[in-house]
Image (cartoon, rainbow, N blue to C red):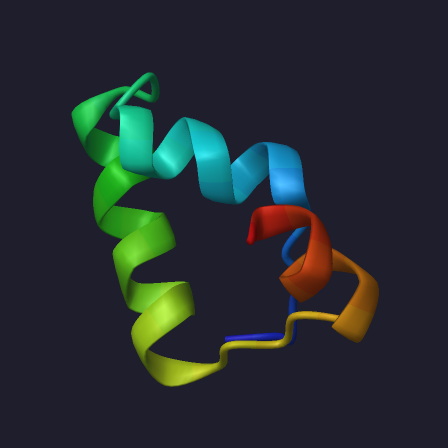
Length: 46
């Protein structure tokens, strides 16, 4: 699996469960294994 930079829109949609079940499974795997989140995104998410 490659590396992904996770954006604030993805984080908020993930927690709102807007994505399909397949996308949610994929994002759960990406977030658990390779959580690449920029400092700016962390601040936006707070």
